[in-house]
Amino acid sequence: MGKVLMKGNEAIGAAAIKAGCRFFFGYPITPQNELPEYMSRELPKNEGVFLQAESEVSAINMVYGAAASGARVMTSSSSPGIALKQEGITYIAAAELPCVIVNIVRGGPGLGGIQPAQSDYYQATRGGGNGDYKLLVYAPANLQELVDLTQDAFDAADYYRTPVMIVGDGMIGQMMEPIEFKEHISRFALSEKDWATTGTKGQREPNIINTLFLDPAKLEELNFRLQDKYKLIKSNEARYEAFNMENAQIVLVAYGTTSRIVKNVITDLKDQGINVGLIRPITLWPFPEKAFDNIPSTCKALMSVEMSFGQMIDDVKIASNGRLPVHFYGRSGGMIPSPDDIIEKVKEVIGGAK
Amino acid sequence: MAIVFQKTKGLTDKETHYCPGCTHGIIHRLTAEVLEELNVLGDTIGVAPVGCSVLAYDYFNCDVQQAAHGRAPAVATGIKRVQPDKVVFTYQGDGDLASIGTAEIVHAAHRGEKITTIFVNNAIYGMTGGQMAPTTLIGQKATTSPYGRTAEHAGMPLRVCEMLATIEGSVFVERVSVDTPANVRKAKKAIMKAFQCQIEGRGFSIVEVLSTCPVNWGMTPVDSITWLQNNMIPYYPLGNFRKPEEDK
Image 1 (cartoon, rainbow over the protein chains, first blue to last red):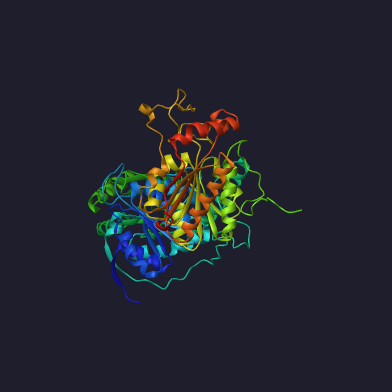
Image 2 (cartoon, rainbow over the protein chains, first blue to last red):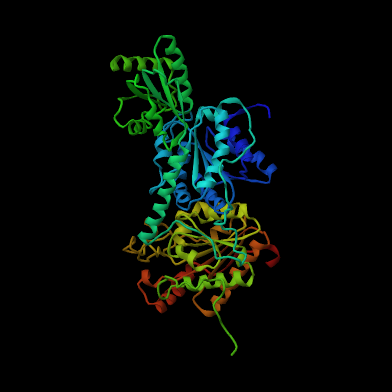
C-alpha cells in the first residue's frame, strides 16, 4: 500500500477505524477537532457510530458503557477536556475496561491556549483521577508512529483490559506528513470478551461491571490485581528510541515534537564537535527506565527538554537514580523551544560538567 | 395448592440492604416483574447509580453496569449505541439524577436516547445520611438544611418530570407513587409502558416514583407514607406528562 498525506488528527481516526474501532464519543475542543469531525464522516460508512456528547464528562462515560459492551471505542480531547474526563478514566481503569483516549495537548493551566504543549505529562502519567491506577501512555513523535501506535493501542487495551492514552502535542495533531497504513496484525493473542454486558440470554450468570467494593479486603484484592497488571505492562511495554548515544558527552531526554527539535540540535552540535545523545521515551508510562542503564561513560549529564516547565524531569531523575546530574530546559504555554536556545543551554551545562 | 404470588425471576436471591420501610424494594420488584413479563431479562442491561441503589447490580437478575455519580444516562447511551437491540435502563435516585446528573439526563432525553429511566424521588440524599436534595421540600429538614429548606436560600424543589416533558426526545414521562396498593399497580403499568416505548424504538422514557426514606426523614414507615401523601404528592402531582400520540 502506498503512502498518503494526512493531517495528524485525521490519521488517528483512519488508524482507529483500521484497528476495528467502530464507536467514538467526543466533545469539540481545539486543537483536536479534525479527529471527531473525521469520525463523524467515516464511522457511519463503516457501520459504526459517532456521537457528539453534551460534555467531556458524558463522552468518557459513554466510552465506559460502550467498552463494557465489548466494543472497540475511542474518545479524544485536549488538555482541559481531558481534565474533565479524569473521573471517567479512573472508573474505566478500576472496571478494567479497554478503550483508547487521545489527548492533543495544548498550553495550560486553566483554559490556557490552543498552541502545542507537553504540560499534561503529570496528568497522563500520574493520573488526575482518584486511586492507584495507571494508563499505558504512548507519545508518538511523527505521524507514521502515530498511526502505528494508534492501531497497537486498541490491541494493548483489549489484551491488558486497561485504558490506553495517546499523547500528542498540538503539533502532532495539526501537522501533515506522508504515512503508510500497514496491514494490522495484533501482537497479542486476544480472547473473547466474555466479561462484557451483552445480555445473559438466560444462559449464564449476569455479568457485572463494577468499581464499588465496600469491603476493604475486596477493594485491596482489586488493587493487587491492578498492580500485577501494571507490573506486567511495565516489563513488557516500555518503549524508547536511543539516538546518537555513542561517546555522548550529554544525553538529552525528550519526547514527541520536542524530540524532533532535539535531533536538529544534535546535528548542529555535531558540526561544532560536541557529541549529544537522545533518549526518546515512546511510552511515557511505563517510563523506559532501562534506557538509562545503557548511557555511555563519556556522558557527564542528563537534560530533560520539554514543552512544559519540568514534569518528565521527575521520571528522568528516578530513572537516573542519582547516577548523573539532571538539568532542564523547557518552554511552556504554547511556546516551542528553538534549537538555538537548547544549544545554548547544552553548552552551559557541558561547560559546567567538564 | 395454587401459587398466588411468587418472587419474580427478575430479582436475584440476594437480601437487599434497604432500610425497613424504604420503598426501593417495591420499585425494584415492579421493574424486575416488568422485565420478566416482557420476556427481556436475558436481553437487558441495567445501569446502577451512586446512592442508596448503587448495589442494584446485586439485586437485578440481568447484566448490570455500575456508573459514576449522575452519569448513568451517559453510560446507558454508550451501551445502547453499541447494542441497539438490547433493553437498557438506568435506576437513579434524586441526588444522582436531579442534582449531579442533570446534564446527562437532560441530554439523554434530548437525543431521544432509546433507554428507560426509573427515577426514585425520596426528597433527600439517603446513602450519605440525609442531606438536602434538589427535590427536598420547602420547610423540610435535612442534615444540610437543619432549619428547613427555604426558597430564598436553596430555590424551589425541582420538578424533573415537568422539565423533561418539555423535551421533544422524551416519549413517555410519568410520575407515580407506591404509597397504596392501587398506586403500586398504577406504577407497574407506567413502568411497563415506559419499557414498551423503548422496545418499540420510540425514544426516551422515564418513570418517576415518589418514595419514602423513613430513616433519614426520622419517621416510622407508616408516618412516612402519610407524610409522602400529605406533602410530596401535592407538590409533585402524579400523572402522565408525555406519551405517544396514539395513546392520547
